[in-house]
Image (cartoon, rainbow, N blue to C red; front, side, top):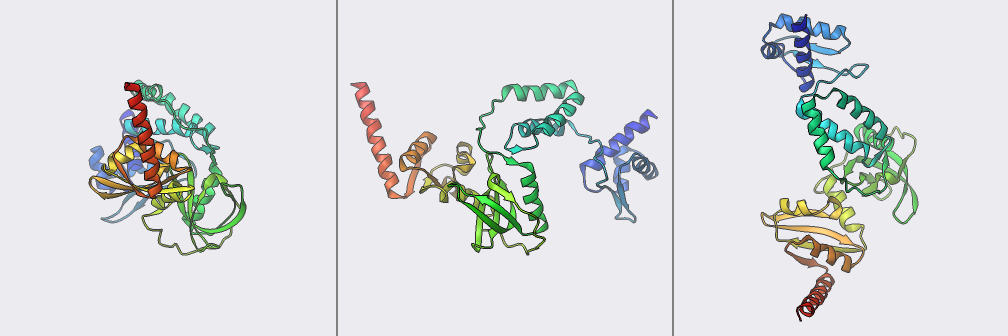
Length: 321
């Protein structure tokens, strides 16, 4: 009986790890006959798991969605990843899931073997969150947007812009983009006849429109690039294009996602479209990165940087006098 129970747990773990399995593959993995696999599949069905099967040589078994969530069998790496993800979700940018995340985390940690609990605890103790206390978005808003994008259904919502202006929008939602701080909706604005990015925390969805649409080709570079271009450049009073003389991978390690859109020029150079409230703020930010760069535009930014360089040089000389 023990051997049979262990085998069924291993079978369940295999079914959860891949979309579909041939009966012969499962038999080979578990070192049993295909008849035993069929019998174990029937036992799983009796226990409430919905396992679909298709006959024939190319047939197989697939664990399908049932009426209730079955127990999940996770390997070591999956368990650690889920635990870390739940901790982040409990203090993240989405409201309405904090308590559920903590409940799920408590259940998971209660069943973790000591070797995995030590790994999760080490990650927790060694991590300090630098996340700001900015606005968060309600989980139901994200679910509504995601469902409309998935079903290709037009979305109507109330929206408040950065300056407090309220408006009603009717859009064809393409998808959600998470920058690491905020959630954005990328959509085709039917009134503006163009692509627009919307802060999800400023979106108040209205009733379903039940009006379908044919998806459009996403803007150049894809959804994430378009959103980053907008929040990192077009939304700032001062805009700039900067060439960095470093590889893209190194640059991305220094820049935060909202800093702007990074486009590789070649293996050792990148172009960044960015912005700030003032030329002085942008000059200070660029200098703080400690990376070689050149101003492509505007020329006024180069003048501000030159002025700061003269001031620093004079201060340094005065300190040595």
